[in-house]
Length: 109
Image 1 (cartoon, rainbow, N blue to C red):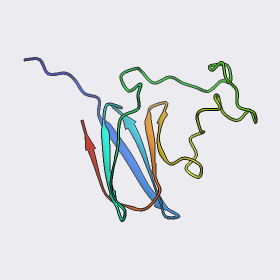
Image 2 (cartoon, one colour; image 1 turned 120 degrees about the horizontal axis):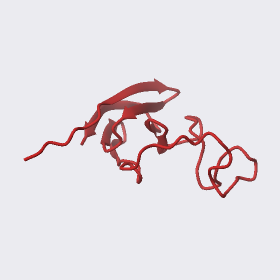
Image 3 (cartoon, rainbow, N blue to C red; image 1 turned 180 degrees about the vertical axis):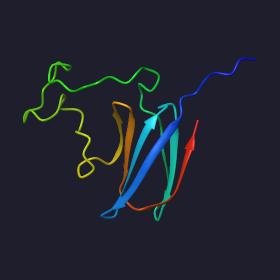
């Protein structure tokens, strides 16, 4: 039976202003389980986890432009922990912003 090579996963977690920010780099085929005062929450991998991450740094990579011109699409928020809650794909992984302090975090492959 062949073993598939998995990419390492690293993360940095910050709790500030009553919110938890988890920056994940590496293998995006991971689910994250967090526990906080309100209970347990599961963040599933980004929908396109099996596709190599794309560098989205030009305003020309989306046919849509938001009204204020700050985001590539009116349907996606910018990766800013003051406006995002949930999971957002990034160039090298993804960002999770949980709305309260996390007391336990687990990664599942």
